[in-house]
Amino acid sequence: MKLFVKVFLSLLVGTLCLWLAIRKMDLSATASVLRGLPLSAVLIYAATMVPTHLFRAWRWKYLLRPIGVSLSFRRLMIISTVGFMAILALPFRLGEFARPYYVARGGQSRMSALLGTVAVERIVDGLVISILFFTTYMLAFRAGGSGYSSVLAGAAWLSLIGFLSLTIFLACALRWPEKTIRLVLAATLLRRFAPATAERLADKLRALIQGFRALREARDMIPFLAQTVLYWFSNGFGMWLLARDMQLAIPLTGAFAAMAFTGVLISLPNSPGLVGQFHAGVLIALGAYLPAATVSHFGGAYAIALHGIQFVWYVGWGFLALWAVGEGSRSLRTMVVESKRAVEEGEPS
Image 1 (cartoon, helix red, strand yellow):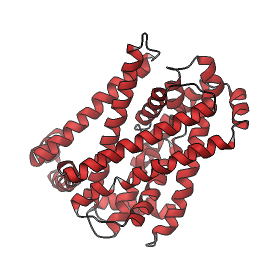
Image 2: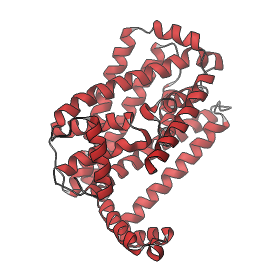
Image 3: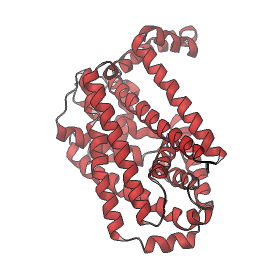
């Protein structure tokens, strides 16, 4: 039932976003622009995905080291590449469990602690894109009459407040772990109505908070933050280059706004392959920088090309990495089933 609800919510969000995206597209013009897309534009954008992929994968090393996990560069890249494919392909962020699962199979750490490192990564990413989004909104506003709609402006404020709140939770969990756990249990009323479940949850929360240790270590947190900045910069810069090649004269801040708003949108229960959410995010953000006719004519083709190149990149490399990961889990189905079991049990199967 829980899986059904998750899939239903992800499909509902994806369908709604797809409807919003199609409303903003001239389908005939979109098809014409895509047919004329030069191969050089595709190759240039694909080239920018090399450093994006590298920094996105490599930075996890600095979150793993404080909990005693050491992976070779090759192993780190293989596991991360499989994980990125799973995040993109699976609904409701179920792919987030893939990377911790493959590391937990090696016996170096508990699944809960590894999930803590992923939680840090997601919260820091969310904070970075929220700050970027809010900054681009303020720059546009100060330039004299922001083109940001009420939806974009509201999303900028809500995302910033939301991820700042999560950052405060992280700080409290690090400074007062037991008090934070007691507060969570009190809020859920588990100690009163399900004491045994409360104890199991408390144990998992303690292990999860262990994954936050990198926040205390400057030698790990500084390179992690530096590579996070490089990851998001190369991502946004590549989007800007592709936009220019597709006759979308947006400033670099416009590309960062499109990247950030899309990132915020896909943090909701995501549809399989991010279909709909990705396209709606890009098109709505472009509307703050370009006339509606330009967005309708070229924006849809840009969103489709951007999503298509990323999808082929992550899924293509992901399936190659899935074969290389070995350990009896080379099928996507096996990875999903065993990852889910590992999350439920708290340990590798």
